[in-house]
Image 1 (cartoon, rainbow, N blue to C red):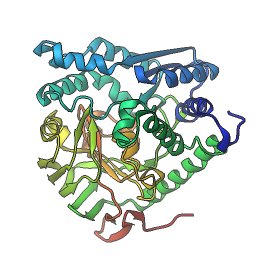
Image 2: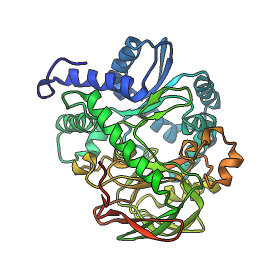
Image 3: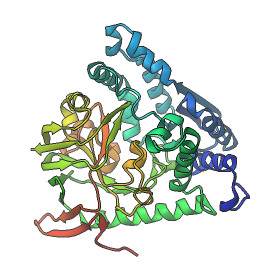
Image 4: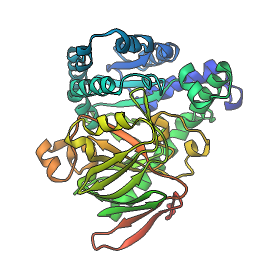
Length: 420
């Protein structure tokens, strides 16, 4: 841990501290574990620091897989048509094998949010579907929290330009780094202690919701009039989780949400997104969908309509919900006033829902249930898991009891019940 005070730390010290917190708090990495990391070539500096911290924590081997924007664009411009129905199954099989053997997982999210926005939506959709199918065995281990894993962010020029379009590249990059440091509590006197206190607060809120045992949630706001049933035996989670390998980890850094599994057949009404969605290098804006019987029956977007349609056509489960999360509008990320065009951040600025695969850990004893037993409790199954934001300062949410009584849960985007 840096000996400098929070106000005098250099950029290099902050980057080292981010890496240290990611390994010690995010992953909870244990001596003797291997680590598998993914990052873009733009995040080489942060990846190297995380590698150093992992070895200092006792990792036996750190393996990093890098992706490159230029190479990704080359595929869309020069590859034969059949390329877009292919994915390196051998690679994803290897990831799943690593996780089964107890390897920890860390992802550095740093993507250009509009990288593929000018590419053929048909090809983008096909490539995403092929990747989702190949990644499925590994994704199931992640959604079951079989291993300790976490996601952290690294600022890149393309991402910074999207968030701060009116600044010079150097200024924009510096501002994005500072936003990352601030929202991940690196700018505090003792980030590890701050994370511990924050985690405890999220755990208290999740415990409150588990005591309430609401049958459903009702949302009302501009463009949203929606009721969402919760899965049978659902569990609310927030902050850290003890993975199947017994290691406590905080999967998202930052995180401001509590979340659970909705019932895949119990969503009714209209929902309007309050923030744009950056998905696999394409931007989708102005999302509005209508649910009936738990399934999307109408979907439109003001930008990225074709990509949205391809997304929900991935499989039957892609039109149903796998997660619901509650986030107060006063969260530090929302308070920053920034739209990050990155789900890790934007989902923690607003209450949100996710299309696709459910987290089995959000069902009581879910890690012990078969896929059929999870489905019987209402948990959704899909190749995808895509979060999009529906919360705002104008959204009201009620918790609906099993007897049908509505209780105020959030008003104007804030918790209606204070906890101590």
